[in-house]
Amino acid sequence: MHDSRDLIFLFNELFELSENTILVGNGDEPLYLPSDKSNSKNRVIFTRDYFASALHEVAHWCIAGDERRKLVDYGYWYYPEGRNAEQQALFQQAEIKPQAIEYVFSKASRFPYVVSIDNFSKEENTYRESFTKKIIEQAQHYLTHGLPKRAGIFQARLLDFYQYMELSSYL
Image (cartoon, rainbow, N blue to C red; front, side, top):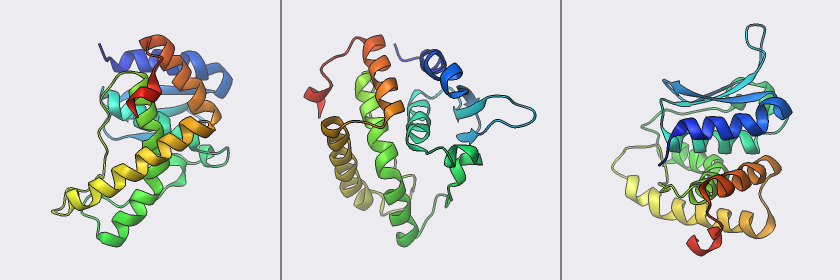
């Protein structure tokens, strides 16, 4: 039922012409690449054929502003797995909004959402509970006050495609 090729089709249908941006699967790692001399399209690249990775990378794209979308990977820093507590806190702060949008997209497409703390240390469960709570609070804020424009467009298309109109009952 959940095929990442559907997400590619839906995203590209909505944003290839209007935003000069396409969704691309089969990446070794997720990455955003702005257009350049060799590629006329901006590319949101997700890991392999993972549905959740596609939703997550689209969420990042939906909140990145005009200037950030001119930069490789939106100009974000990234500390690899094994972060210390301070680095993990910075990661989580940066990830609340994209993961909240991913949560909304997951519910709209009837796909199970799993929070990503992206750190596999012993403290994983310590981080997970409070981080999940912040993500759901942000998702509820978005649903009450409105999603960023591109996220709202994509959410509406997911709801239509997956014929799932009762998103609020899952919060």
